[in-house]
Image (cartoon, rainbow, N blue to C red):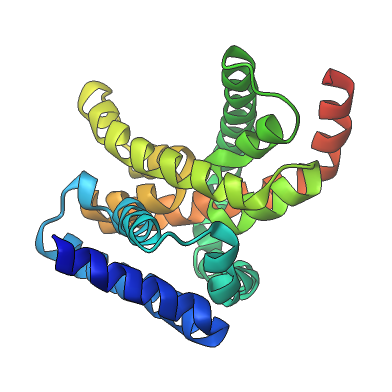
Length: 248
């Protein structure tokens, strides 16, 4: 016990003595924990081992053990956040690859995305009101049902806190992936579009990973819906600002 504490204190002192060492350590820890979580999930595909949830959990433990502040952590890993920009551009690839599917089912996809997005935002607003959240906290919760790159962009545009929004997105994704499996067991959804859209709309990235476990076509549709919903919300963000300003 004493040895462990001494090691933690020595590491803490080292990370704080040299900002470059701290930046390199937290970057390596973030990427390393994610790769470890992916390897574990491939071996034991359980919902509670999803990398989207287990990686932050491991990082939280490390941050607490080393008594590291959020500002110290983000200073070394901000380059990872910057990669979200190119990730958004890369989403054009699956849209192009599935263009035939979009042409065949665009009315259904469009209706589902609009209704799903409206339901997600309205439920988030109601949930925030129920919990007594207002201001930036409430606005940070609203984009929780779209994938992280889009959610952080929308959060920034409507006056939320992007980093906090990312936490809400992770929580929504993990919970949605778990509940999506339960919903599939209850509802007689035979269409691959319906099953894929359920995961893509309700649980974005984590849901898409789970949809691929159900079937390749379900996974492809979930990924497509996730991207299209994200783009729709980014385009509608200016209208959201006006609407939320009137709602107070």
